[in-house]
Length: 245
Image (tube, rainbow, N blue to C red; front, top):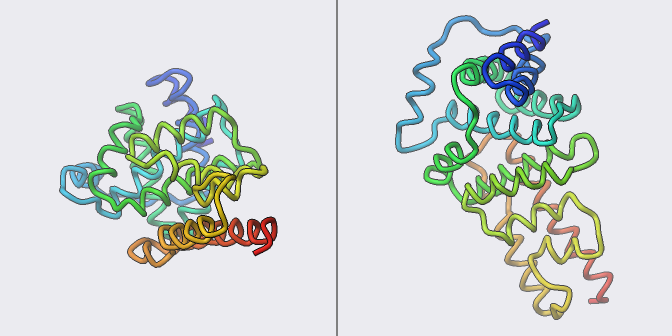
């Protein structure tokens, strides 16, 4: 019932795209007890500070997730489930519920702007954290076993707004697309790279994606960082076998 009410609200305010976001939030809130009370205004005022508070970050992360989920014009249940599970595991059910409800209030008044959100995050979060945001968004898109072209375009736009370098975007993207060049792209090198260049690239990428760089973030994010780091290890081991070193 809640999900369909959310869809109606979204349709009234934003027509079709908004209806999808409304359905998204209704689905996230289904079967969950929403905490009563709390100051939505306080959460939004925190955006004016010179750093991103946990409440800011969670709200912005959910906003970006909603853009990826509706990128292809439909709502996939697997992707909804992935986001719901992630937020509950990362922040606990009560805190996740509060974030979902605050976001639901936001979309009644304004359209989600990737550029505005990413400008804020770019100014107030570490580069390593922004790389992990991309990994999280690709994980959402891949929750149904397939990342569509429209989802890639949406995440690519978010990456540009976040100030993520093209090679870093391609590296994370390659973790979700298996092809002959994936290992090279993950390590940010060309197929013509020498063995010494492969080894140097591995050391660089292992350092860049090491989970220790995200110790300041929640456990769920650190787990995602470990998955990203493992992809670098796998890519290097694959090239070791292919090149025989």
